[in-house]
Image (cartoon, rainbow, N blue to C red):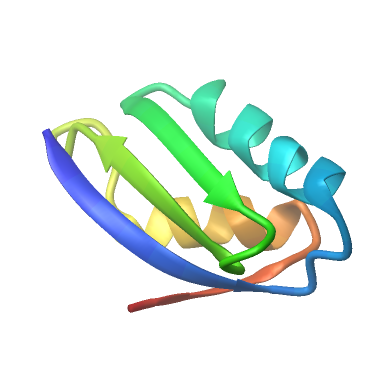
Length: 70
């Protein structure tokens, strides 16, 4: 398993963080997602044999937020 930390921009509340976690955790290859509205960041644990960092960022962007690797 690989860990990735992303800075998230565009969240307005804790529901935003829950939306991001829900989308990511429903994706094959992602074991866990822990998004914090207070920190404006998410920490993801994933299997790099099934999904890559670029795809993870695309998923976050599709939910309406911007993401950059920190």
